[in-house]
Image 1 (cartoon, rainbow, N blue to C red):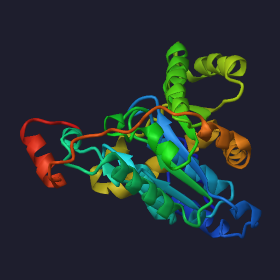
Image 2: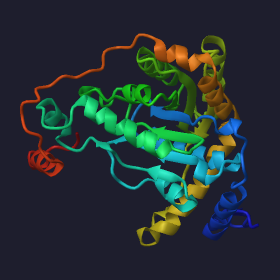
Image 3: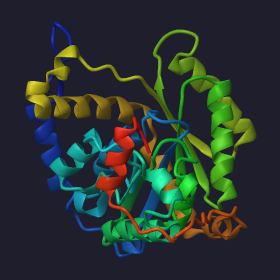
Length: 337
């Protein structure tokens, strides 16, 4: 089988055909049977970020690729983003569709422009109705799966205005959390502590973190930040782990050719997967996912008192459609939910 990254005297050359060949070989090789004990329960993992654009969806992509390489069949995996602000296609859904992994990249809850004001006016579904739709979508895609990745939206409190924050959703679907963090040392650690506390207050266990998009050089380089942040976790967060430090991935300018978007997306996926798997310990993360689902840690954490999440609004008004709400908001200059 040809390598995806083929050596070249003029630099690296990226072969989409080689990527396709390997992806197909994964699908064929990973159809092997698994023991009944391995099928006893579905492992769910909620991927949250300490800010928007930190790389939650790309982390899901890397984790799915790692799970395929670890021996999981595509039919045993699933990806879903139950709450979103962005409705643009993502590389992770391209990867899932190509490999036959069940996926749902949008909804059922979309924070389109005007949504939150309409919610507060009682013109949308209630908090409980929204959460029921989210839970049903996750439960449906989880049927028959061994591992399901649930992609969060924005930072942890996004959605709290309507009682559907990331933490509330993770609690509702009974999924522990993995936090995706930013570059740096003090900022990286402080942000983790803040966001892990938010999930903890809702009774959601946080396994640890992956730090993403770190520079390769300079004061905040990956190696320097890795050494310092790792020391912090070893000393002060021994029950949580850092599973990896991923550098900023740079794509060749040629891959921005929109006329060849499909082929370019495949090459971007290939480049990212190589970098991600070189820097993330999938085995440790998977083992700790299994541990927290099978021992009492998850049960105890889920049983802790949680903060109030209900949001009650005036439901006397008739509900309005998305087109009515979004059209009116956009006409007034809205740029988000």
